[in-house]
Length: 178
Picture 1 (cartoon, helix red, strand yellow):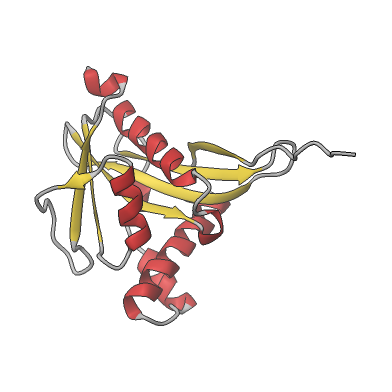
Picture 2 (spheres, one colour):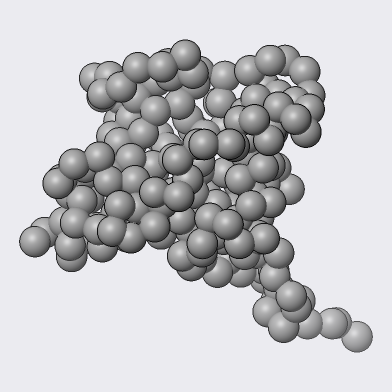
């Protein structure tokens, strides 16, 4: 007897307050991963706490920004929050993607492209016509995700100790078309 295949896992993405339990857990996981890679050792809980303190995440709410969480799971089962990202308006036409994170367990499932699309839609909804971002050279998975999804190298638009690469993309959503 041939059993029918189980339904494929799906992604659900939606705006989420940055202080919600799911968003907080994902923001901690994001900071833990990027800090641990940078320092080439596991980040401590105190270091993660320090990195998140005063990080400006409160701006990731309308009208200045938006935070999005992605839940992944099989239909009929409780989904798990495994991805997040924020968009922050820089000026009247540009928004910056920030804190883009997909749990290592969920990489390769299509969640990254879905998350970027949701963040681009949020940027359009805030009035942006272009998105920009910065990242580090060692975050190779993130850089590959951006390139696969149409992001191109741009001139630096900011500076900082953890900024090595800049990408940008013109938006084509309804809000961007004006």
